[in-house]
Length: 153
Length: 116
Image 1 (cartoon, each protein chain N blue to C red):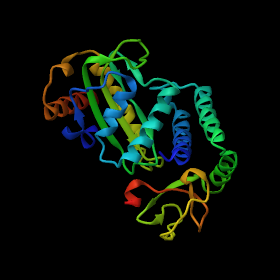
Image 2: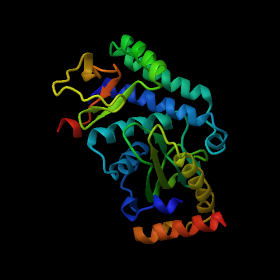
Image 3: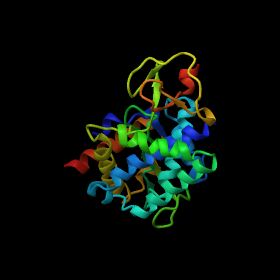
Image 4: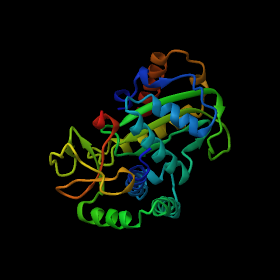
């Protein structure tokens, strides 16, 4: 299921951002949206973070929100080898980010199902550091797809 | 930045998240306390009030009760709630560029794409 959303052009393997806000901005920038929609999305993502960090611990975060400015569910992946302080529950820097955004109405509940699948994937990724070694976005997508399928078995 | 419509959209998006947070499948991943959402919603409302938007907030709540939502995008010059064709000279009837659909009354957000 995640393979429908995982796209090499939506994978940033060397995030330049060094702060929480800049990470969100860099991930949102990947989406093909006009600037004002990106700005709205950023405001909403920051509000979501304000109610509780999406940094799940073990170096992984899943910033997510519903927003009027998107018509479909979108997934962007960002990786930072250095790690970024993201107020994660374990207080440790985050190396891997899954940005998930969805419209307010989502009849197929794709968003929540996807969130659940990413959370499962994150638990598996938390046991390894292999994702820090891959240098090609296409390979990265293949790696995550393989892991997700293993997870589903 | 069209701040007032931004804040209204952020409030509406946060309310959509609030519905997710009530679900067990969501809570099993992110157990967000209800009070945290209420606190953020109140912060947003305060920001809107500070911009003189008290009446806007009242109208927001009335629209939400009436339609289940209060603000929509305009798409191709059409209100994306009632699908009425909007006049080309749609003017802001409130401060900060806040637009209303002349047909259904819902708040509208005209994106940069639309204005271009």
